[in-house]
Amino acid sequence: MAGNSFGKLFKLTTFGESHGEALGGIIDGCPSGIEIDFDAINLELQRRKPGQSKIVTQRKEEDQVHFYSGIFNGVTTGTPIGFLIFNTNQKSKDYDEIVNTYRPSHADYVYDQKYGFRDYRGGGRSSARETVSRVVAGAIAKQVISGIKINAFVSSVGEIFINKPYQDLDFNNIELNPVRCPDMETAAEMEKLITEVKKQGDTIGGTITCVIQNVPIGLGEPVFDKLHADLGKAMLSINAVKGFEYGSGFCGAKMRGSEHNDLYNPDGTTKSNLSGGIQGGISNGMDIYFRVAFKPVATLLQKQEVLTNKGEIIEQQGKGRHDPCVVPRAVPIVEAMAALVLADFSLFSKIYNK
Image (cartoon, rainbow, N blue to C red; front, side):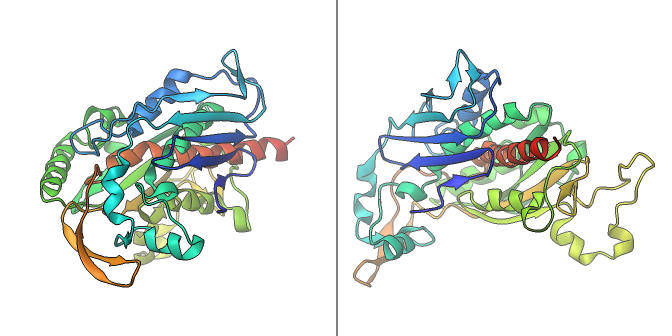
């Protein structure tokens, strides 16, 4: 199985399965001499971990990371950083019923067809639990690019949207509610909807908006390595993501050039920012902002038709502990992937500009 690594200079390779002994990663290319804030890493893991509120999966995992290389006396050495997060609360028996069936909209069928084998316990490698390793690496990447601020938040659940520009939101409110929505009134409506959907044994999708501030001019490369292209790849690699747009996004397709152009100020900043902080694939110093769409979780705690490995269609009800809405726990994952992209381009920029 290929495709387990992300990045070029700041490179993360992850390994492990949802119901295996542990998950982990190797970070290659992290500069030496960076004093690591372990509390900050643990905070990011706590934001992602299961069982943190009534509206997420009730699997209980402490998600404590153990570092085995690349850090000495709390400082990076420049050698590969190896780490593990042990699984402690697997309930593999919850998946015994799907040994011979393929769940709708999961990776079950394509994994079996491609590899001739699949780990049915929680989806194995295709499980969103793999993202715990990304959050560890992203937390370190944030410390590599200290000064750049990355704030992601839930901007919609189902048909409930924040109807305010991000400039009018207080990012300090993001962690004050289980939905991770900075508008408290909207957050209450979202939480109520997720609770209702959960009671029905159903799931619901939503969007996450990410705002990146204090980005220097010059990150990103023309043609195939555009900054927004790598951000798009990073976001689309996250489980359940179905769409990515930055700046004006799809709304920009409805506008005229006279409306859409970001006119300059004398200092090189722009009066508007429909470009989303990126022009020609290169950061222009303005805020980078983008939105990521997440589908409803595919496992339903209600009966639906499934395909067996004998080509039969039968009825089956999902079991186990699953998120009724993935977006609240995906917020730190979006931030982590954005940090990995920016750290990679930041290192390239330093080498290129020497």
